[in-house]
Length: 341
Image (cartoon, rainbow, N blue to C red):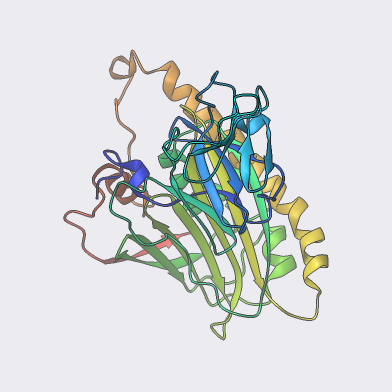
């Protein structure tokens, strides 16, 4: 499947399950398409175009009554199939014909997923979650492309500068082994022979370091995983990168840690501000890079290479770009490199 040609064929998460209540709809934008999310009477999620067909008011500005989303303008109600179930004042009993084209919606793995039901359904792009983990969610919007965000999230070599002192330090690099392999729906880098990172977050929340992973899966899942010297998971950060309006990206991040003596709620209180700092640092550099790319859009060839240059340390970026463009890896061969991280 080509992500560029049929982006809505994939499942995309638009909210956490907790965010979508039973009385208020949610407004979301997916690949430039305004949508309204709500729960039907039985609790299942529904997704419709965010436009009442009567006078084009945004349905997301209304409310949910009896499992149907109610327009704030004239009170027309629509069920999850896009049928009008009430048109106040008209004496009509509703219509069996769908006035709005619904999207397929699913509540799974703590997220509300949406896709175009008319296209063949792929599997959910979820990371495997083992038992015994504490987790919490973080949300943000960034003005950049999915490609730029995925490359940034999985690029270990920017952390010495953008996150200096928080994750790594340039003057305290380590020799590591990086193994790059293909996944069924993506690409993965495994780092070994790295001891604890020199930044504050690693020293606070890791006891030892055995190996770490960075992986990308279609259509927009980026994941960082740390394991200790005994092979036990210590930290798993999963980010779903969802294109919204042109140039905007919605980020839904799940931070999971192994349960221990520290209560989950206390870890959340301690970790959320720290990860908030890191996310804001990434957001600043991503938006600066994206804006600068636009500034040079009309004259890039006059001032140097028109395309971005990849160095030996850019382990995943070229393959992420290929996956997003073609949906597959061409001419890929697994490889092992020694690098200074």
